[in-house]
Amino acid sequence: MLNTVPMEKIRIVFLESSKEKVIAALHKIGAIDFRKSSLELIEDQPLKFQSQIAEQLIRLEGALAIMHKPEKPIFKKIKHMPIEKLLKTAAHIKQADILYSIDAKLHALDDEAKQLEYAIYVAKGLACINIDLGKLASENLGFECFTGNDTNANRKLIEQVKHINNVETKVCKSGKKLFALIAFEKSKEAEISALLSGGAGSAGSITKIDLHSKYLAGKPKEVQANAEKMLEKNKKEKERAKKEIEEISRKSYWYISGIVELLHIELDRANASAMFKKTERTTIAEGWIPKERHNELVNVLKSATNGNFLIQELQDNELAPTLLKHGRLFKPFDYLMEFFSLPRSDEIDPTWIFIFSFLIFYGFMVSDVGYGILSFIMATLIAKKTNPEGLAHNAAKVWQIGAVPAAIFGVITNQYFGIGLDQYFMPFRGISWTKNVQSFLLLSIFIGVAQVILGLLFGMINEYRRHRKKKAVSKIMGIGAMLLGIVALASGLFGVFNAGIGISTGIGAAVLFVLFILLGDLHDAISIITHPLSYARLMGFGLTSVIIAALIDMAFTPTLTYGVIAFVLLIIAFATLHTLNMILAVFEGIIQSARLNFVEFFSKFYEGGGIKFKPFGYKRIFTKE
Image (cartoon, rainbow, N blue to C red; front, side, top):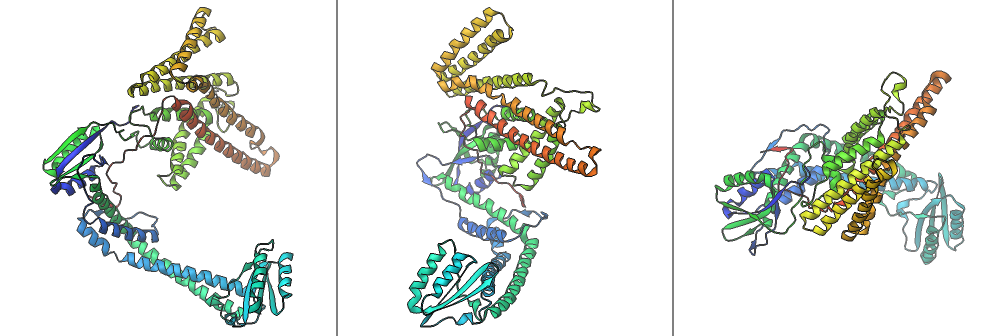
């Protein structure tokens, strides 16, 4: 329960002739995480067809990226087929070529639409000019066109241009924009360019207009009319192209997804042998497997090789990969552990403790039945709309699970959107937050003391496993100092024990504390004093949420005393403010619960940095064996 799945490193030797069968068998059971062998032998190569598989995979995945995934996953699973047949089947999927052609057409139409829209924009801006924009070319004359907001700076710029000799300027106003067309002798080109460059960088901020578009042929009004017609035609062509994609997607999306899945499986198998070493007739594969699957692996190899194989356990100093198994319900917590840092395979796996304490802390701080129900609904909606492999989805699942203890603690503390139901019809009064602040504070610190001691105990076990006996002993000193210190405080502050016991335990705690510093370090020693106090935040954030909820109830509880309109407004305010308080409570509950575990608890023993176990295997969705 508190350890990662035990691993063993193995070496498998089998005949070269059975390599493909062995790879397929190992891939099917998904039990081994391959490692490159250190033996001084020839490096093996990928299987044949590897390049053809990769080529077809790229082609079909590109086609899938163009397609639209149908809303309903209706498909018939494709049966696994020999590689030669699979490659032939993939190559004959003509829909991929059609999709690439349609996609290229859509890109061309998009480019055309941008040019047409630009032509319409320019034509509208120069509507007051009755000249053919397509004939603005001459050996002796140059033309420039720019636009900018109708500001004093831009009007001043236009006046400066007009005062240049042998320059003609025509200005149009379109909405809040000024459009200026300038005709000038070629000899004035440098002067005009310098003036316009200065205007582009000024507060007037002008933008040059490109007059060389093929769609700017004709007078502005003609250009606009023609471009609008072409743009309408462009839109219809894009709609037809998109409908073609929709139709192909409806008929072929799931089938192509199945072929892609088969290609991925075959590509993994083709690449696997690159991790092997070989002799003239044999192949050597090495890797890590869970010990519990050793017999399963042996049986599979017997079948794939007709018994012609050798398997042996390897002893070396390589750190085994980490495999966590905590059930499907608590998978989101595994995700959070990996997001923080995966435990090493040679240390205690604290995930179960993390799950249990996280839910207790979270429920303690939120502790409201209404907030628990509301947060469960919101978390469920978020989980349905997000990627199952993403942070948002897994955080929502944790939130969803946490809603249960939040509601349970809400019943214990009699909180229903901040209202105690005992004042209406429930006989159970619960444990009042506001009347038991001291008790909740002491409970929070007691929880902190217990978790810090547990962390030191785990630290002692981890250090002992790594043969660091001095550090293991220091952890024991820390535990002893805390326990004796608690007895001394209980005697001195609360009179639980007599003075003699208080003095002797106090002296003992001081001695062990000094030994803890000498054997460990000062930071660890200080933390066993400060970290338990940090758990007071459980009471602090829980009480804050309760007080805010009570204030909302006092000010905005709906009543018909002031009329129907006021009643409706009060309902809206009541619901909105409680939702905001719930979100704040949930956010703080998740953050602080994670912090207490990852900082105060894990720092006593957790090293992390484990290597995730990545078995050579696959998951079928669209296909079958």
